[in-house]
Amino acid sequence: MTRKYGEHKKSRKSRRRSRRRSRRRSRRRSMRRSMRRSRRKSRRKSRRKSRRRSRRRRSRRRRSSDHKTKKSLIFQPLTIFSKENCYACKDAEKLCKKYGIKHKFYKRKDHESLVNRLAPNYKYVPVIIDNRMNFIGGTPELKKLLEKQFK
View 1: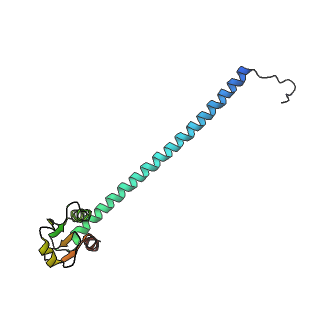
View 2 (view 1 turned 60 degrees about the horizontal axis):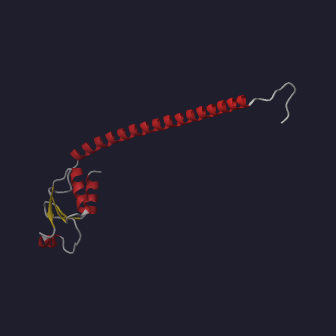
View 3 (view 1 turned 90 degrees about the vertical axis):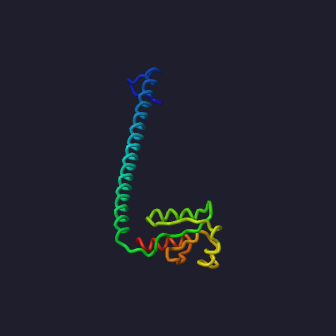
């Protein structure tokens, strides 16, 4: 390295100081960048939350008005013949609660002859029957009916 006329060689101390200063500056810059990033992320999250809340409110309003005005395609209360620990049966129950439909649960084993008369050759659970002894089907059929009614 060539020096110009009049320049002197820096001492070790001064070199160390300059290194420290440059390190401090770079740390400060990186901290500022990270702070900016975290602020942006928090702003995005808060915006998303507010959007979700407003969507939920809108959907609740729509549901409540739809439930009141439409006529029922399903004659209540529903009779559901089910098994213990059956996920499809639990889903049927959740659907009934969601749409406010009255229902009664019975074990299929206890009422096998009745189920065979109302739904011959139907070997799945749940077996869903309405108040007028019309066979509806299982959970998927109930779901289609409810979506059609409350659309």
